[in-house]
Image (cartoon, rainbow, N blue to C red):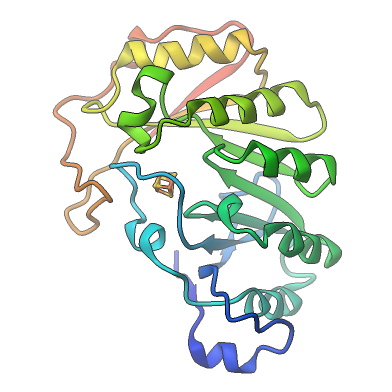
Length: 249
Ligand code: SF4
């Protein structure tokens, strides 16, 4: 899908906020696929607190940003009545310190908000849940504890675990869990460990297991090669209390 890249010329026209901070990489102006039951845009935040080798967005993860919040607000003003949702993605939106003020403005304009997150900021997730800022959360469950650093470049599984607990114990905001699999990084036992953990925590939503897709034209952050084999989804633990869906298998 075409992305609306925010340029410095656009910034000159912006009248709401010129902080000098450029947290935004780009905006995808329209999607019907990324926010269930909503017509939405996607705001891509620059920077990330993980370094997943299979990441398809290295330019966003490493970028210092190209656009500011005011430009996005101008865009959202023009789309009022045409869109009803905003997806906050990246990179990692929750790593942007100005996110609470940003979401408040988006909510004040009447938009529903979906947050895509890797879960490393339970403090942010909690405060946003408490404030009623979130309407939907998609949480990446990257890897079980013993593989977490290998898959994400950080050893902060405990922070992710706190976020997962927060979301599992609240009942107000719908959320889904997603796991991307490259079999050079994770095998069937690792994915089954994740599924069992979700069962034990009382997860009731949908867990999407996503097959890594390789493209020579789109090198990943860790320059991952194509998989030697696909995950054998028939060997995975089958949960009793929630659905597992498979994407790109
Ligand atoms: S795939 Fe990993 S590195 Fe890339 S944006 Fe998501 S959390 Fe960050």
